[in-house]
Image (cartoon, rainbow, N blue to C red; front, side):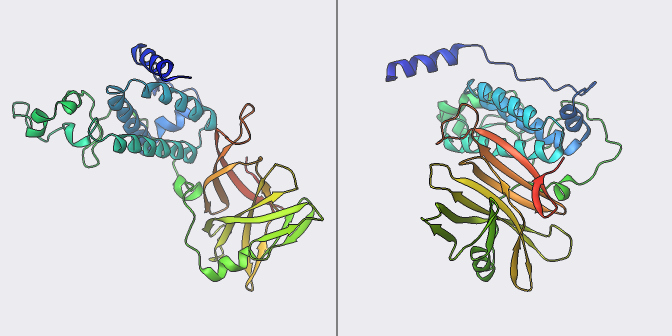
Length: 322
């Protein structure tokens, strides 16, 4: 595709009317997703803040509404059961993406140029930079400002109080970056024994390569650490990759506990070929995992399906929890 065709497509997308975002109704929520979002005030406030941010950015770039609609479709599909931790993880990830978009174009969309409610009177003169920088004048006329971290969020929808509500952050922890682990423990994990396809492989310095067996096993990384069984000692979620001589590279996940200084891995949880592990967390009796996995029409290089797994130990094996 040449540059002229690209510019023509961008121009057409800009001129097309914005795609309306899927509405959230809290009057009579019928789906588990809507009931969870409407009954939890904190979660509802995060979602409303995300919607206001999208509305503010779309006034400068209407194409953001197209990507937001696709994100909403994926959110309702991945969190159809209405798990609070699933919705919160998706919303926070999307807010991070939008924050990166704002930071990438500070002169076009700057939070400082957006008036904050109560910061000055309506008759007060605008700041000097609004007069000398015409590029940000349209931003100062936004009716829906980008939410300021110290400003009170306006209430747009009535939130129904939940009869009983628990702390989902402790039971369903949000997947995060890899933890900092003692080098001695990392050495033990990189030299442990892991069962893959009914055979146990002993890794040395994080690898087992046997050309005669067509077995290539490599230690990935320590994804998370936490007290899974409540005994006061941490367990570790690790990834190990297996290649049987072909082009497939299959990630296997293990929950490892240390007993008398020796690693005791669980039986593995296998992910699809070349899945991208974005983050993980260990809570009491549950492990959460964020991945990007290949879809039915994706090439082997480029997975595109975002998923959130909730795992637990059953008979010494990591499995999906109901």
